[in-house]
Length: 379
Image (cartoon, rainbow, N blue to C red; front, top):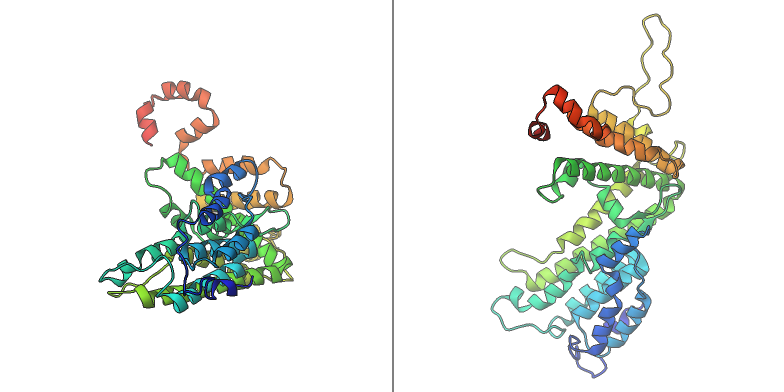
């Protein structure tokens, strides 16, 4: 998109024209974005979609361009960044962040909202920085849009969203640290099981795409890196104007998701080998077993199957691989659902397993075994 209309003097000849906060046209543009709110996106997910939003982002950009002739307002430019990211991907995001940087550098003294009288330069610009920080809004802002954006479509694995990529960068421990406090053991185990299944799907998808469509992955990586560079330039430009007492301006949540998304992508690029199949299983394969004592060779282990299972964690990994295999090759198979239930039972103790497998017989079992309900619940 041509961004020059947002950088030239406004129609009345002044440096930045009028503030747009009370302009009915500005509020009309805001209303056009309402279907992109998280609540609407989650409704789409519950209906079987990926969380896409029915928003005319190109129309929003056109109306924003018209509004820019009336006033140079950071709040409008934040909308432009969001619209560019939704309509043109990460290249659009980089372009939009670059527009913000150029505006800050060229029109800081005059743009809207105006600076307030304050001995603190950061407080004087608080309304401006708050408007830019809204890019990190996870309920109705750029971060929400990015989370539900489909970035990869590998064969047999379903659509991979930007949110999936970010989750794919987190270990089990990291994911647990970001979950709400106070979850019960069962709920926590279920959430972590879903996370690990998600990580495995993302890993398999990125590896498959890195082999089958390497140019697509390369373009995506370059776009994310360009957005990170543009973000760093914006932070530097704002820090030069509002930073004080050693504290600069940052958009940490936006930087975090951009860096996380690169983790599974670059890992897949590093592991891609056109001569090898795209399988997460091969990464876990053990070396070939040594000859037996009589000199004979043992039966082949098979492509990518772990040589031994020595812990519950190994059991969980094997079940994850089974789930991924069937989701990739036979999406309609009921086996993944059964395997997920088995995986959920791996960390359970005996009484928890009995409750899971035969809940109707637990009362009789407890009576015979002399197990107290309160005691068993605490185990």
